[in-house]
Figure 1 (cartoon, rainbow, N blue to C red):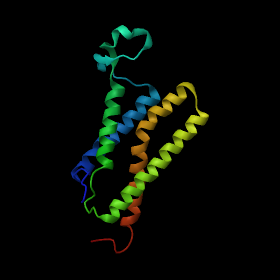
Figure 2: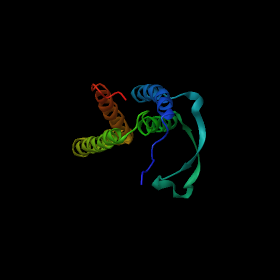
Figure 3: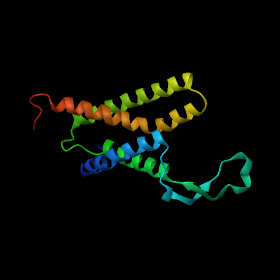
Figure 4: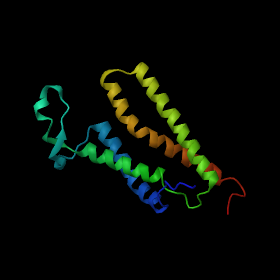
Length: 157
């Protein structure tokens, strides 16, 4: 039984068009604490502050720049990572699986090192970045392997 868990190939191009500017804006947002003033809005919130148990649900004033960039980063990287190649076959599926395993190892190695050597709010920052690095590691490794694979003479179909 063949499982089809990949998106159609056309989503890879859409994903790249979204990923590149989102990545640049995300870096700018993090490095320079950038927020668009027009995105200061009232949003529905589930509040987990221990002092305010009486206001578990409610609306708060928040700038949603980070949320939009984060959601776009997840969507675009998911589209890039999990879209079929034009010539998807068993060997590409193996490269994809190997890249997923490699990304898992590297992602958790980074997390392991962070648990040992990083503390307080710096650790929180590492954890936030860790949400995105798994897909970034996978995309990097998969595309490098695919580039090398396509350079092999005789690969053309």
